[in-house]
Amino acid sequence: MTYEEWFVQQGNLHANVMKKLTDKSVDEVIEYFKFENMVKNEPDFCPLYKDNKKCHDMEDLNCYLCACPNFRFKMEGFEKTPDGKTLFSVCNIKSRDGSQYIGADYIHQNCSGCIVPHRAKYIKKNFNRNWFEIMKDVRPKES
Image 1 (cartoon, rainbow, N blue to C red):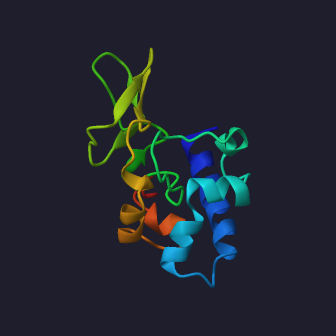
Image 2 (spheres, one colour):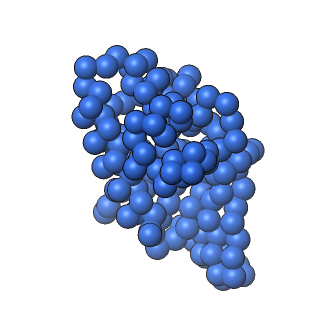
């Protein structure tokens, strides 16, 4: 699955959950997206839920921002490195907890060590009921 396919799929899954929560306050929506609630109430939201597995090893994991608004991807790549690798994704805030997956001809951002978007405080600060609006800078604008 490409970044683009995953991005659209996740945004649509998020929108479907949000349809159930139209009468909820911001705090109630954020509470609903707690990992433990999502595993029970929305088992198809994430493939890890079937094994009750977290994507990040942290207490109070919140799945509202399953993806991070600071992630950037470009399907054709941002640039070629001098050694011929294509840089496909980066962290816009250069989180110290992020890293890179480096393969023979590619480089991808590795967010597994970063928990920035999974805290309720961060979600509340950046909250929008429309996931695509929060994530609007993740992929480049079409020209």
